[in-house]
Image (cartoon, rainbow, N blue to C red):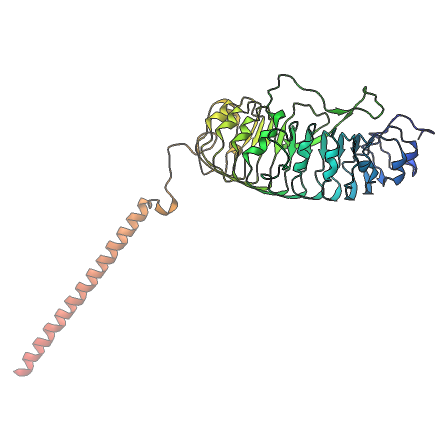
Length: 422
């Protein structure tokens, strides 16, 4: 470690196993030591530093997070993902909060998300996925006009999202900049209100460029190497980590909850959405025709629901659709054959007994009779008839023999009686 603080210290991507006990004395405005093998805890002396960017991600730090790192509001970037931090987050965040990035993914944090995060008007990135946090959906964050990424995956959040909008919010003024929403694998339930998606203006804008990289200015004011956020989302059927998040990357993941009711048609207005995952819920009704308007959609997963009706032909207009999963629903009718549908395989449609046509082996126009009404084999008919006739013949022959035998005996009795009389 240097003898006096430097503005920027970056020891990332090494094999360090420890740091000096008083390492916080050497902190400048920015300290990065991610992707090492460091254990231990953050000493409270960090509160006496002038740190603005603190990146300890991908290590083995543990214990509680010093409250000053969140409450005092002077931090710009706090990235502690992939560690063993525990405890609850503080809720007394001061005014004039400068927090841009709060990344706590994959720790052991409990409790609720602080409502006072609404004081952090510069906040663009929140990732609290893979923890043990609880509470209802944080609709109060909708007032943060710069919030782009909200990841809450794999926690214990619960309740309905339909009535989750803050009572003071007006239509079109909540989550207006949100481009990534991931609430997968929680305990959310109930219907999704069509109004909920009306505020996602950033996903309704048709973009003609590749976008810009999301980044936070360094605490030192040096913009040559700005801090770049990292996010992991379920993208095209795999978990993919984006070390550079473009402002054009858009995704909604509602999978593995208990949402039910029909899918809101208002989702079709999100014309710049790239990824939509609603699998593993209890949605009913038809797939909305308006999904055909989401012309930038690359991945659509509606599997493991109770959807019915035909597959809308409008989906064949989605020229960028590379991943489609409609399996394990109650869909019926012919599978569309044009556009990207010619590239999808069986696993995109399996588990829908009413679907027919390629790529399934069930041809359209053929309705096999259920097993209980299947005609018996001809040979079995013949065997039954022969058995009946054989049995009948045996019965008739046996009866005739009895009658003949009784006839002969009767004649013998008559003859014997006559002989006795004489």
